[in-house]
Length: 210
Image (cartoon, rainbow, N blue to C red; front, side, top):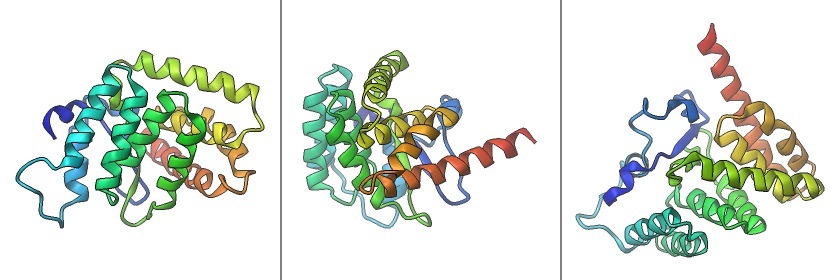
């Protein structure tokens, strides 16, 4: 998909496949948007030319780079309409909404994406590579953390914060917001998926140190 090979996508698998996390940047070379999309579509016939969904996707990445997050979200949403079975687009869409501080919408998209997770076949994606600099992501996460602390009763904020903390490998910090999110009926299924993933990541980290 054009220049999208520069955009790392963190793919957290539930099965015995490797867990790819923040520490793997520069080491793992199969975690790009293009490669993940190709891997997810192994049984499909790839078109010779980029599809309209591909173009929306690339334009969305360009808008995200320019910090035009609302426009990026709009373009990711258009791509999703054209490629509803794409497993990565919802997470990219969620991240654009999060970056635009549209937290309620971002949580809604995240819940829907996690509801489709199949432990045997698919993973949970975290498109950290949309950011050219981690500092931008961390600033946005700090902003969310401040709001989530102020409105600790808002389970959408807790779910979104837990997901982002998990995405950057802050496992211990992700536990409490995800636990709070499980107390809410609407967010409990998604938060449980992420907590289960968190435990698998912990086990794998422990095995690496043995």
